Length: 248
Image (tube, rainbow, N blue to C red):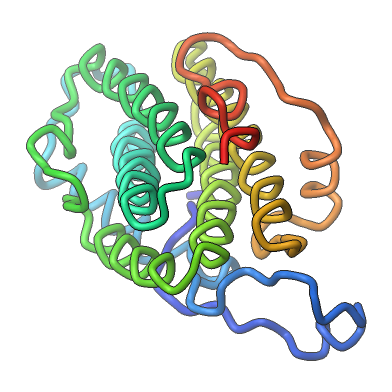
């Protein structure tokens, strides 16, 4: 079974890579963020176990992977939303409030699919910052602490979250052929690409730093950053989350 992005370990930035680019002003992904290459284990098994033991699959047309994907993406979108709300309270940058509004739309889009297929919502009764999946809870706590360090760290954390979200959505899209689920995943990925552009733009304006991707390949990242704002259907979080980078 294909593994999804998991969040259990710490990112170690390569000093050799930094030395090679010769640009000490270039921003890095915060050092306490999880390492992309090993984020693909515990969360996946946790979600699959939760699916089998706690939730019942009412619609038999969905595979275990499809159910697990919806459960995971519901809480991952909540993680982004809750982080950005907290970062706005800390730093007062409108981009966090604006993109949090888009993330609410993302959450609602996945919640609609859960209801459609009769799958209990793991985030239904959880307040801000609380998650049913323990690995996502640990990640949230870790990222929240990182974002408290500085405005720069908060913006870089936001960009890293969007990178992770893009890769998770791509992974989950490979696990279904259902048009409705694929449409939502594709729309959410469009929103995440826009959010990534917004965070990178505001980071440069606020701090003069360039963002270095920690999860996407350099080629993929450059293609996203060099493209303009994308539009998508409902649930995409299109644009910059209702006024992102220009309102800071």
